[in-house]
Length: 274
Image (cartoon, rainbow, N blue to C red; front, side, top):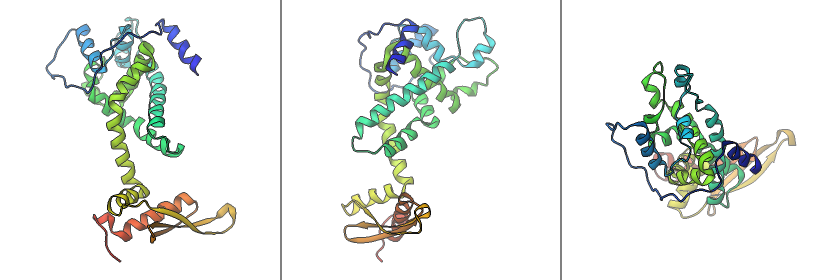
Protein backbone atom coordinates (compact mmCIF):
# COMPACT_ATOMS: atom_id res chain seq x y z
CA UNK A 1 0.00 0.00 0.00
CA UNK A 2 2.84 2.37 0.87
CA UNK A 3 4.43 1.89 -2.55
CA UNK A 4 1.05 2.59 -4.17
CA UNK A 5 0.72 5.96 -2.37
CA UNK A 6 4.31 6.84 -3.30
CA UNK A 7 3.66 5.98 -6.95
CA UNK A 8 0.68 8.33 -7.04
CA UNK A 9 2.85 11.21 -5.86
CA UNK A 10 5.55 10.39 -8.40
CA UNK A 11 3.01 10.34 -11.23
CA UNK A 12 1.92 13.85 -10.29
CA UNK A 13 5.53 14.95 -10.29
CA UNK A 14 5.66 16.42 -6.78
CA UNK A 15 8.78 16.04 -4.64
CA UNK A 16 8.51 14.35 -1.27
CA UNK A 17 10.07 17.24 0.58
CA UNK A 18 7.63 19.64 2.22
CA UNK A 19 8.45 23.28 2.92
CA UNK A 20 7.87 24.60 6.39
CA UNK A 21 4.39 26.02 6.81
CA UNK A 22 3.25 28.43 9.50
CA UNK A 23 1.07 26.87 12.16
CA UNK A 24 -2.61 27.67 11.85
CA UNK A 25 -5.05 27.14 14.67
CA UNK A 26 -8.80 27.60 14.33
CA UNK A 27 -10.88 28.78 11.41
CA UNK A 28 -11.48 32.52 11.18
CA UNK A 29 -14.67 33.64 9.44
CA UNK A 30 -14.69 35.40 6.09
CA UNK A 31 -16.79 38.40 5.18
CA UNK A 32 -19.71 37.38 2.94
CA UNK A 33 -19.05 40.52 0.88
CA UNK A 34 -15.45 39.57 0.11
CA UNK A 35 -14.80 39.58 -3.64
CA UNK A 36 -11.24 38.78 -4.62
CA UNK A 37 -9.47 37.88 -7.88
CA UNK A 38 -9.14 34.11 -8.21
CA UNK A 39 -5.46 33.93 -7.28
CA UNK A 40 -5.92 36.12 -4.22
CA UNK A 41 -9.09 34.26 -3.30
CA UNK A 42 -7.27 30.94 -3.44
CA UNK A 43 -4.60 32.39 -1.16
CA UNK A 44 -7.34 33.12 1.38
CA UNK A 45 -8.51 29.53 1.16
CA UNK A 46 -4.96 28.24 1.49
CA UNK A 47 -4.53 30.29 4.64
CA UNK A 48 -7.63 28.69 6.08
CA UNK A 49 -6.30 25.26 5.16
CA UNK A 50 -2.89 25.98 6.66
CA UNK A 51 -1.21 24.92 3.43
CA UNK A 52 0.15 26.76 0.36
CA UNK A 53 -0.17 24.58 -2.72
CA UNK A 54 2.89 24.13 -4.88
CA UNK A 55 0.58 22.93 -7.67
CA UNK A 56 -2.44 25.22 -7.72
CA UNK A 57 -4.10 23.13 -10.43
CA UNK A 58 -4.75 20.44 -7.83
CA UNK A 59 -6.63 22.89 -5.64
CA UNK A 60 -8.61 24.22 -8.61
CA UNK A 61 -9.52 20.68 -9.66
CA UNK A 62 -10.72 19.87 -6.14
CA UNK A 63 -13.08 22.86 -6.34
CA UNK A 64 -14.44 22.04 -9.80
CA UNK A 65 -17.88 20.47 -9.96
CA UNK A 66 -18.76 18.32 -12.96
CA UNK A 67 -21.41 20.87 -13.99
CA UNK A 68 -18.59 23.36 -14.66
CA UNK A 69 -16.74 20.88 -16.89
CA UNK A 70 -19.93 20.21 -18.86
CA UNK A 71 -20.08 23.91 -19.76
CA UNK A 72 -16.32 24.41 -20.22
CA UNK A 73 -15.11 21.21 -21.94
CA UNK A 74 -12.06 22.89 -23.48
CA UNK A 75 -10.40 24.17 -20.31
CA UNK A 76 -8.30 21.04 -20.01
CA UNK A 77 -9.12 20.32 -16.38
CA UNK A 78 -10.94 17.45 -14.71
CA UNK A 79 -13.85 17.66 -12.32
CA UNK A 80 -13.19 16.76 -8.69
CA UNK A 81 -14.58 13.21 -8.71
CA UNK A 82 -11.21 11.45 -9.07
CA UNK A 83 -9.77 13.51 -6.22
CA UNK A 84 -12.87 12.70 -4.21
CA UNK A 85 -12.12 8.99 -4.67
CA UNK A 86 -8.58 9.47 -3.39
CA UNK A 87 -9.63 11.80 -0.59
CA UNK A 88 -12.08 9.23 0.75
CA UNK A 89 -9.24 6.74 1.24
CA UNK A 90 -6.94 9.37 2.76
CA UNK A 91 -9.66 10.51 5.17
CA UNK A 92 -10.24 6.97 6.40
CA UNK A 93 -6.51 6.49 6.94
CA UNK A 94 -6.02 9.76 8.83
CA UNK A 95 -9.12 9.31 11.00
CA UNK A 96 -8.28 5.66 11.71
CA UNK A 97 -4.73 6.58 12.74
CA UNK A 98 -5.94 9.38 15.00
CA UNK A 99 -8.49 7.16 16.75
CA UNK A 100 -6.00 4.28 17.06
CA UNK A 101 -3.58 6.56 18.91
CA UNK A 102 -6.23 8.48 20.87
CA UNK A 103 -8.01 5.41 22.30
CA UNK A 104 -5.34 2.72 22.90
CA UNK A 105 -7.67 0.55 25.00
CA UNK A 106 -10.59 0.49 22.59
CA UNK A 107 -11.64 -2.61 20.66
CA UNK A 108 -11.85 -2.74 16.88
CA UNK A 109 -15.63 -2.58 17.07
CA UNK A 110 -15.71 0.63 19.10
CA UNK A 111 -13.07 2.27 16.90
CA UNK A 112 -15.03 1.34 13.78
CA UNK A 113 -18.27 2.70 15.23
CA UNK A 114 -16.70 6.05 16.04
CA UNK A 115 -14.88 6.27 12.69
CA UNK A 116 -18.15 5.62 10.88
CA UNK A 117 -19.76 8.52 12.72
CA UNK A 118 -16.86 10.80 11.76
CA UNK A 119 -16.63 10.07 8.04
CA UNK A 120 -20.31 10.12 7.10
CA UNK A 121 -21.47 12.70 4.61
CA UNK A 122 -23.20 14.92 7.16
CA UNK A 123 -19.98 15.41 9.08
CA UNK A 124 -17.95 16.11 5.93
CA UNK A 125 -20.48 18.74 4.90
CA UNK A 126 -20.15 20.41 8.31
CA UNK A 127 -16.37 20.53 7.93
CA UNK A 128 -16.78 22.03 4.45
CA UNK A 129 -19.12 24.65 5.91
CA UNK A 130 -16.58 25.48 8.61
CA UNK A 131 -14.09 26.20 5.84
CA UNK A 132 -16.79 28.04 3.84
CA UNK A 133 -15.71 25.82 0.98
CA UNK A 134 -18.87 26.48 -1.01
CA UNK A 135 -17.67 30.01 -1.76
CA UNK A 136 -14.82 28.66 -3.89
CA UNK A 137 -16.69 25.92 -5.78
CA UNK A 138 -16.63 26.21 -9.55
CA UNK A 139 -20.15 25.41 -10.74
CA UNK A 140 -21.75 25.52 -14.14
CA UNK A 141 -24.28 28.27 -14.76
CA UNK A 142 -26.91 25.60 -15.23
CA UNK A 143 -26.36 24.35 -11.68
CA UNK A 144 -28.56 26.01 -9.09
CA UNK A 145 -26.67 28.46 -6.89
CA UNK A 146 -28.04 26.50 -3.96
CA UNK A 147 -25.53 23.77 -4.82
CA UNK A 148 -22.93 25.81 -2.93
CA UNK A 149 -24.70 24.86 0.30
CA UNK A 150 -25.96 21.42 -0.73
CA UNK A 151 -24.57 18.89 1.80
CA UNK A 152 -23.78 16.22 -0.78
CA UNK A 153 -21.84 18.68 -2.98
CA UNK A 154 -19.95 20.05 0.01
CA UNK A 155 -19.10 16.58 1.32
CA UNK A 156 -17.74 15.52 -2.08
CA UNK A 157 -15.71 18.72 -2.40
CA UNK A 158 -14.23 18.23 1.06
CA UNK A 159 -13.03 14.74 0.17
CA UNK A 160 -11.62 16.06 -3.10
CA UNK A 161 -9.80 18.76 -1.16
CA UNK A 162 -8.18 16.13 1.05
CA UNK A 163 -7.10 14.25 -2.06
CA UNK A 164 -5.52 17.42 -3.44
CA UNK A 165 -3.78 18.15 -0.14
CA UNK A 166 -2.39 14.63 -0.07
CA UNK A 167 -0.99 14.80 -3.59
CA UNK A 168 0.57 18.21 -2.97
CA UNK A 169 1.95 17.72 0.52
CA UNK A 170 1.47 14.12 1.59
CA UNK A 171 -0.17 13.00 4.81
CA UNK A 172 1.35 15.87 6.88
CA UNK A 173 -0.68 18.40 4.87
CA UNK A 174 -3.90 16.46 5.47
CA UNK A 175 -3.11 15.81 9.12
CA UNK A 176 -2.45 19.51 9.73
CA UNK A 177 -5.99 20.34 8.68
CA UNK A 178 -7.64 17.36 10.36
CA UNK A 179 -5.81 18.02 13.64
CA UNK A 180 -7.87 21.21 13.83
CA UNK A 181 -11.17 19.69 12.76
CA UNK A 182 -11.21 16.31 14.49
CA UNK A 183 -11.15 17.05 18.25
CA UNK A 184 -14.49 18.86 18.39
CA UNK A 185 -16.05 16.38 15.97
CA UNK A 186 -14.88 13.45 18.11
CA UNK A 187 -16.39 15.02 21.24
CA UNK A 188 -19.72 15.53 19.45
CA UNK A 189 -19.71 12.01 18.02
CA UNK A 190 -18.96 10.47 21.40
CA UNK A 191 -21.85 12.32 23.02
CA UNK A 192 -24.17 11.21 20.23
CA UNK A 193 -23.07 7.58 20.43
CA UNK A 194 -23.44 7.55 24.20
CA UNK A 195 -26.94 8.97 23.94
CA UNK A 196 -28.18 6.48 21.36
CA UNK A 197 -26.44 3.45 22.91
CA UNK A 198 -28.15 2.37 26.16
CA UNK A 199 -24.88 0.94 27.48
CA UNK A 200 -23.13 4.26 26.96
CA UNK A 201 -25.99 6.20 28.53
CA UNK A 202 -26.07 3.95 31.57
CA UNK A 203 -22.30 4.10 32.00
CA UNK A 204 -22.24 7.89 31.71
CA UNK A 205 -24.96 8.25 34.34
CA UNK A 206 -23.53 5.59 36.67
CA UNK A 207 -20.04 7.07 36.69
CA UNK A 208 -21.34 10.61 37.18
CA UNK A 209 -23.97 9.85 39.85
CA UNK A 210 -22.72 6.75 41.65
CA UNK A 211 -19.03 6.86 40.82
CA UNK A 212 -19.08 3.28 39.57
CA UNK A 213 -18.93 1.54 36.20
CA UNK A 214 -21.73 -0.93 35.37
CA UNK A 215 -20.74 -4.59 35.18
CA UNK A 216 -22.52 -7.10 32.95
CA UNK A 217 -22.72 -10.84 33.62
CA UNK A 218 -24.30 -13.71 31.70
CA UNK A 219 -26.60 -15.60 34.10
CA UNK A 220 -28.20 -18.08 31.69
CA UNK A 221 -27.81 -19.57 28.22
CA UNK A 222 -30.77 -21.58 26.95
CA UNK A 223 -31.48 -23.49 23.77
CA UNK A 224 -29.22 -25.25 21.23
CA UNK A 225 -25.96 -23.58 20.15
CA UNK A 226 -27.39 -22.49 16.80
CA UNK A 227 -30.37 -20.83 18.49
CA UNK A 228 -29.10 -19.94 21.93
CA UNK A 229 -30.81 -17.30 24.03
CA UNK A 230 -28.76 -15.34 26.53
CA UNK A 231 -29.84 -13.71 29.76
CA UNK A 232 -27.61 -10.89 31.05
CA UNK A 233 -27.79 -8.89 34.25
CA UNK A 234 -26.21 -5.48 34.78
CA UNK A 235 -24.93 -4.49 38.19
CA UNK A 236 -23.87 -1.18 39.67
CA UNK A 237 -21.82 -2.15 42.68
CA UNK A 238 -23.66 -5.10 44.26
CA UNK A 239 -27.09 -4.04 42.99
CA UNK A 240 -28.71 -5.70 40.01
CA UNK A 241 -30.27 -2.76 38.20
CA UNK A 242 -31.43 -4.46 35.01
CA UNK A 243 -31.79 -7.72 33.13
CA UNK A 244 -32.18 -8.48 29.46
CA UNK A 245 -32.45 -11.34 27.01
CA UNK A 246 -31.37 -11.71 23.41
CA UNK A 247 -30.11 -14.00 20.68
CA UNK A 248 -26.54 -12.82 21.38
CA UNK A 249 -24.59 -11.54 24.35
CA UNK A 250 -24.45 -8.11 22.73
CA UNK A 251 -28.21 -7.96 22.23
CA UNK A 252 -28.93 -9.19 25.76
CA UNK A 253 -26.45 -6.70 27.21
CA UNK A 254 -28.05 -3.77 25.41
CA UNK A 255 -31.49 -4.92 26.56
CA UNK A 256 -30.23 -5.16 30.16
CA UNK A 257 -28.88 -1.61 29.95
CA UNK A 258 -32.13 -0.35 28.41
CA UNK A 259 -34.18 -1.96 31.18
CA UNK A 260 -31.84 -0.48 33.79
CA UNK A 261 -32.39 3.00 32.34
CA UNK A 262 -36.14 2.52 32.70
CA UNK A 263 -35.93 1.07 36.20
CA UNK A 264 -33.66 3.85 37.43
CA UNK A 265 -35.82 6.53 35.82
CA UNK A 266 -32.85 8.02 33.99
CA UNK A 267 -34.92 8.76 30.91
CA UNK A 268 -36.96 11.12 33.09
CA UNK A 269 -33.83 12.98 34.15
CA UNK A 270 -32.99 11.31 37.46
CA UNK A 271 -33.02 8.20 39.58
CA UNK A 272 -36.24 6.80 41.06
CA UNK A 273 -36.12 4.56 44.06
CA UNK A 274 -37.86 1.19 43.78
